Image 1 (spheres, rainbow, N blue to C red):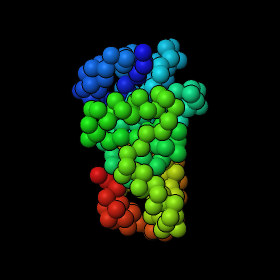
Image 2: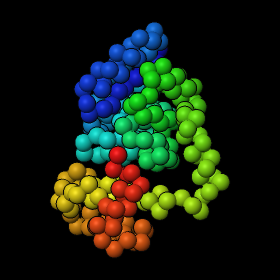
Image 3: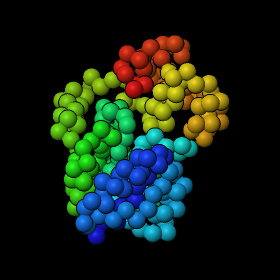
Length: 210
């Protein structure tokens, strides 16, 4: 029996995943979580065989939660299931320890296949992502500048480009406005930009807000 923890801040998504996964005789959804704290609480109380984790959750992000899971439960595979396209978060997720990455547009049988694959100790990536990974090996010098940003810097970039204030960004990421300002300065330096307007244009041109 494969025990699964489903973590997503939207109840309707959790219910949908539970319905899909419950259709497999050897799958059992043993828990649900809507934020970082609930994920870690469940794992510490009751181990599971795989975690299906959303990237965008309130408070600490899915990537932060992923890192915490791998720090405390390094042998527990994590499948990232996200609304964001693979080219935005997949590389970051895999680098942070994810065993697989799928978008929420994935078919039900693809999710089932991914869970079975990572439970066998293998990575699960789509053919499209595999092609992108191959491109990065061949054209590493040509990677876009934002690939050099840390996970927190990338989150801050997207929030600034979305028009959020320093206070709003701080609240969203559980940071002080002063720390957000430090991240902003680092982002501008790494991207060789000078203003928020330039940063917003950069994000829009590369579809980072989708």
